[in-house]
Length: 245
Length: 54
Image (cartoon, rainbow over all chains, first blue to last red; front, top):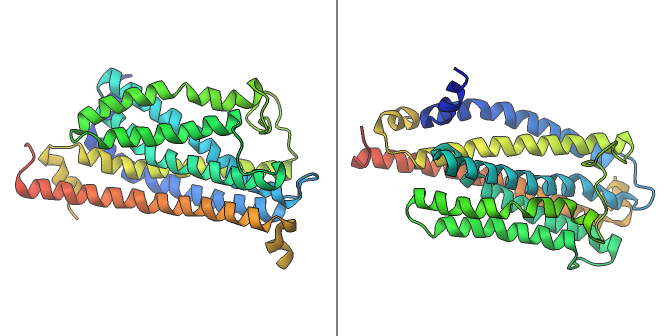
């Protein structure tokens, strides 16, 4: 009984239908949270006492950076499940994550660079946080490149899963880089033990953006997952049912 | 309004950061929908040429 949900999650037709039904329930709350977070972050939150209005880059930089790590972790866990239990749907989840994660890692690097320029006086430093985040981008791109090198989806799934799993060591390195090493980058002010070090009018829009981006990732993942599941499927019976207009 | 657009002198950094993020968000929506559409088309094609199993 306890395992039936697991088996249902491994069933492609069930996942295809469920993902389709769930998408709007994630997409609309994501849109509302992101719009509210933007208004809060750009208009309602007070300027920072040191950085003035320049700190408002936070409201796009932190959610992008959060996505870069959260999506990678999801990808590595899904790849491991796919490898261990030979679960096609889990591999499809991992494959769906990569382009999303890569693009938000790119956004985190660019917005961070645009924040660093006025505050640190440089767009780029070979600093532990910045360097490990750049390595994360290369991990995503390597994963996608490796997948595209195989014609056979199932071989691509297995080989790329190993890369995804090995690369996950970089995730804690990125997170703790600002604590372990002397970095230009500031220490976490929300994702830390104890209370966030930010006044509420600044914190609330940030939390809205973080949650909004997370739900947005969920919606994107579901749409991509349907495509990935369908492309792995050879059983005529449910394809005709699923794709019939 | 112009004070808002000026972002306390940081406009040249703040707005490009928001523009890049917005572009990434929009591209992700387009890419995801395109992937699903293509997979559907290919699945229909497989059905048509009989490249599937019962």
